[in-house]
Amino acid sequence: MKAKWGVSSSDAFYHFSTSGMSVATATGITHPLDVLKVRLQMQLVGQRGPLTGMGKLSMQVVKSEGLRALYLGLTPALMRSVLYGGLRLGLYEPSKCVCELAFESRNVLMKIASGAFSGAVATALTNPMEVLKVRLQMRRTNTHGSIQVLQKIASDEGIAALWKGVGPAMTRAAALTASQLATYDESKQMLMKWTSVQEGFFLHLIASTIAGTVSTIMTAPVDMVKTRLMLQQQSQRVGSYKNGFHCAYQVLQTEGPRGLYKGALAMFARLGPQTTITFIVCEQLRGLAGLKAL
Image (cartoon, rainbow, N blue to C red; front, side, top):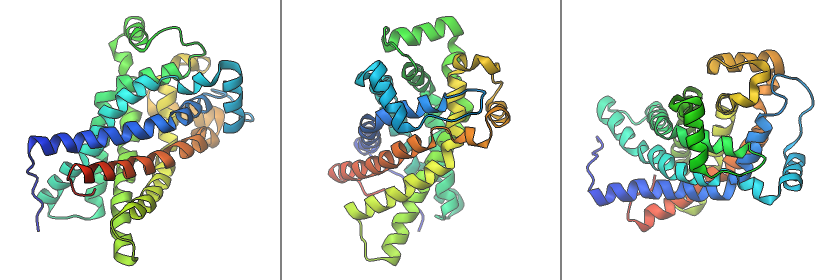
């Protein structure tokens, strides 16, 4: 039976707002781990050598910059998560319905394509907030507000600088959303089919944990490349990166394969719980709004 995508304006509002609110909730809780991930990814740029672990780095940051440093960039992160999360999760269902109507199929490839499309579109529209967030996260002193930093980036480097790293960011978002949503969707279906677990909190918990693990493995190298491109001024010792592929090549050449997974543990520590919180909160909010489960 073919899917039909016909909703009222109130349903559309609830659909996108529940997505945005759930991602914002998860972002607020896991933001300190995102700050550590960015700091870890910017270690020993263009060099090989022993890396500082997440635990040691967190203590160094708190000792030298204070606990507040773990929340640098939180404002743009929350602003972006509402828009990005609302679009990334919100576009998945309609995209899936379009694929179903066009190809008369509901297989996993359609879910992957729908997730990739919604993630890429959401990132293309919200990339300036991501650039602002990572710039603030690398600041040792927070003397300027978000708007001032945004204006400074635009005036010193041009408006195009707000879309630095948009290629890898779109690739990462496409891979993240495709792996996250498709894995969550398929995991739920398989768990309900092959086990006694039914729609509810425990199903959402198990499926979201699986989705978080898969999405971290898939996106860690792309996320590292995205961060390096957005923080090129921090990487001048090895020259400017021309694009995502050049950045990845330079990292492999100068830092080795391990360089592509700098910050991967922090990313997993953040993305795992973030995925779980996002889906659980989203499912609960959708239930309260009278919408069907994802």
